[in-house]
Length: 377
Image (cartoon, rainbow, N blue to C red):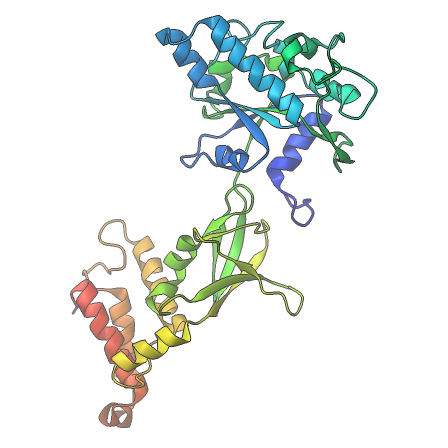
């Protein structure tokens, strides 16, 4: 989405567009990670587990009246606290058009964006009272839901949304795990599709550079990227020791910017789709010094750039193979080992005879490859 502004997220822009169309959004997320679910876990949302409604009814765990009362309470609390009512269908076709809606407990109008946005007329701080009004969602209220004075006012923020001018507060979002080719077939009879706008979230990507190597990485919802994906590509953990720091610095960043640091779970957050980031490393000096001491006093190890080069070459070679072990050539030998042997052959006789630091580093890396890959011809 090249028209996005800095720090805008494509999913949220698409949702705002659906709101301007007067539609309730149906998010389609059939990814293994369920990234939309993860996104809403970190938002101000109350989750209505639609699949549980179906299972409870089928197993007789709860009566329909009990199930609808639970839905009513979720709806009322979402309005009261100004939160998103996140209706998670999972892989179910929960029948909201029939069994799981009721005019005085869970009105079908909850899926009508016009009525949801119309609640702003009764928002907290106005002179209007939703209780006793003609608004369809008012029928779900009970006297026990009211504050002193017999008032119920949905909560909305005081700042306007940039996209459509509506106020931040109570919203309704539906999510299904059915794919784009099947969701309508399964859900058409259970949801009021004339009120629904389906949205499929597509991953954005960033370019990550280390030294003179660059690769594209897909982002998760909210601009997230796992450190493990970066490390797998550039092999940094093979080189840097201890608790080294990693940051991603966006190309064109202002002087003094420190970049995006990974969190305690190894995740980079709020990366901007379409941007290019450079990997910067802050070494753990104590761990590096200890590693050098264990190697015999000052032996120079291959730099991260050198190892990244051999790793990249090995990956490129493995992609060309239709069969075999990744990282090996057709004859079974390691491509990385070949590159190291080529560098050893290119050393001068004096470097080899005198045991230069470069010679020792290459020999050490070559021995490491022999241990890991079993050597090669």
